[in-house]
Image (cartoon, rainbow, N blue to C red; front, side, top):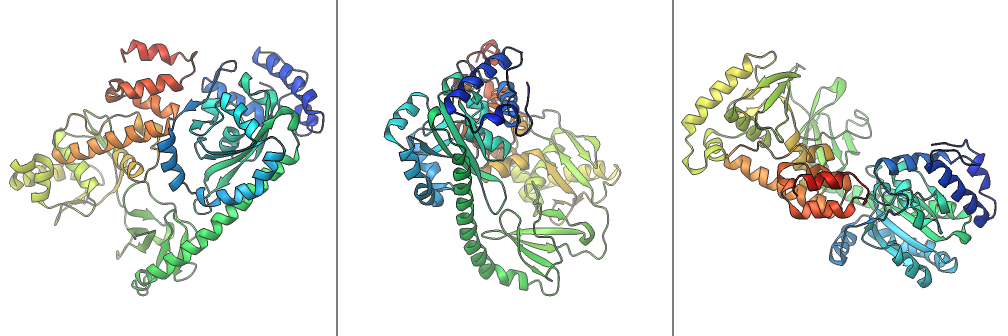
Length: 499
């Protein structure tokens, strides 16, 4: 796939007649998709987007976006979405222009789902025919190259004109979009877009949309500053309560809002995926204490800095679990794997009675648990750096814990889409009957399924459909069939599985 340097090729057409440029781009698209070269080269942002879209199996001739959310689900998403407060400002900035120019204004979430769409009535009817409407996902892997999906994929404002759209049915449109970033995390929370007929193309549309996105970010930053001040005022006693010990108040995303002494820590802290411990370089190790909103960070009170082992517990989809202690494999029996999983789930520690309940239910015997814990400690202490990994009074883990099931649990409980790789691993210790393991396993199964069906992400649906439970889930398989392009070879594999 060919590209063009700035100011040449397709870029040089930007000031020309929109219809003439559309005709040139149509010839270029046909030539490139046939494996040849066009009379001008594709812009780099378009070439890169086509590559991503084709890799996601988007059909250039018959592609269509996935319909993910119904009206009830949309209402819930809009109400809680971080861009809801800036919608009036976006309307004021863009909607009058959109009406006059026969455009529609569109606002998406970070995954490319259209949450709001307003504008010229005639254009709205045309957009409906092409499923450019609320509830549809216009990410690149769903709808191919388009301004909304490509701005979210690239992280930069972008304008896509006519046949720069990969999918043929969108060639009569020109669109410009810009990402809107959360001032706390810096991550895109959505995009704003103006879409209209090809003849209405003008390079200033991109500048207008970019300015509107910046205004939205400024509005979000003002709201955040108010929240920050409220959080500081409410939680400052927690910080001053540390006395002379170093500490900091953190936002939910890890920004430092206040620190004592001032300047001892950077402006942002990378929060761990699981657990409450965090490495702070020369300062040693810190402990994160959750507040009603945000975190209190304090230094671990130790007389000296010493090595602390890392215990990896990759227990998702693991019928024969293997732990890793500082990278070295440690083969476990089923009961020892259950004990480590339960202790990882309860970093505050568990008594023998509580562990007996989690392992055996009402028939549990703490004497049996103490014997199992003694054997587990012996196994760990026979390994390098294994001393102190399991502590007593109560039983707890003294190592840094890296557990895939905790990362999945944190994503589910925070309402985030879990990583696709984690989704595809399967259930937590699938052969375990321990009540405590079953409870978290059921929570994860339900939470992951709900998140995947709600978001409708193709990769996540595919990952879930490849797990033992997903293969038997008719709704998951049917949703996947709906979002996959007709030409996608994965349809045959779904059928081959008997799903």
